[in-house]
Length: 334
Image (spheres, rainbow, N blue to C red):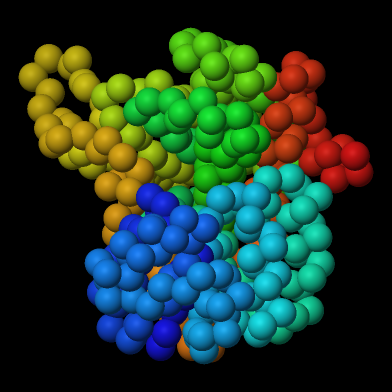
């Protein structure tokens, strides 16, 4: 099949490299507002470079991967849907929840599959954790702990348009909690602090945050995030049940140092970058999208799924600013 890629920055070029090695993909068509980026990608991966998203959609692509700037996501998703082309789009659907809802309403009855990129759904450890929940082997869950710790803050320009740590970073954890447990969040309480990088505080954001989520069956989920974890990129999940407890991400490259006498775990080189930590997941995710584009399976992470994670981020942002618990019902009605 022929896959189009819109946006060839860091993640777009990474996706182009991955797609170029998949057996299901015969050719790539690429475009980027910076023509040189498209030309470079075309030369590197044997792709065809075109001048615009419109030209790409007219090139007979079987599916399109959107890795452009967040502000462009709604317009590009809807353009592909109107053209009848299946879509893979990196999260988020849009910067604002209102725009995401507009996309959801349009896509809902279109008959075109849209796959939003939440890569942890394709990580082997996280997938095994979900199977353990679905099978019932853990018994009723009591506590879920989801962690995302970045090794260093993103640039000031990125922070200024990111929407905040809950919408940009913790939203991965929020999606994970929903997907792993199969439950919905009913209430949140979130707090945060600034421990460095003054430009984050200046943007009205925090660089370290914790969220307590109450699920509709009484399970508690604890989400931890920071922009300052110089030992490496740390993404983990713990599931504690009445019968057993398990973890994903508890492996030799875990960026954590034990001070127990005689301990040698973890002894590997820590993960430093999210694309390193989730390289296997990204490949599996794009492989899944080729199956979506071929009509072999439905979207494994729909716009509706992404919107639900977005609502949790909205609730946590409100909770942070108003220093109080916030129900999901409240933000949906706002």
